[in-house]
Image (tube, rainbow, N blue to C red; front, side, top):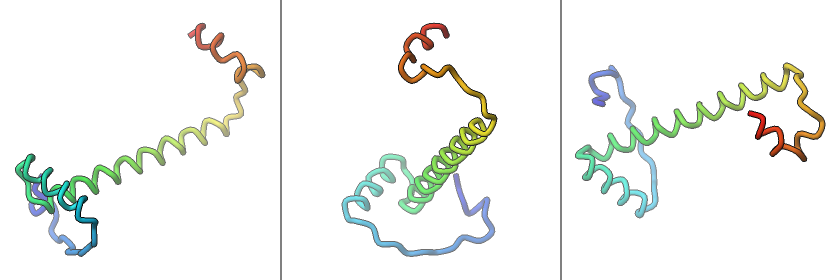
Length: 86
């Protein structure tokens, strides 16, 4: 994805990363035929999406718990038996 076409303004930043991580990113860029900055942007975007997805799943589970639906009292000890019924 070419970010220059989609964003009017990009912010330049500088970070320090370990040499082995930098070398890994450079190898990824070379194998994907992209510039290093693009690989870093893609990896950051992918990480943010993963984090947001985890938070969304957590919120969904919290909402389910608020419904107050109770399962069988012996579910934790007899979970295999209940799993077979599915």
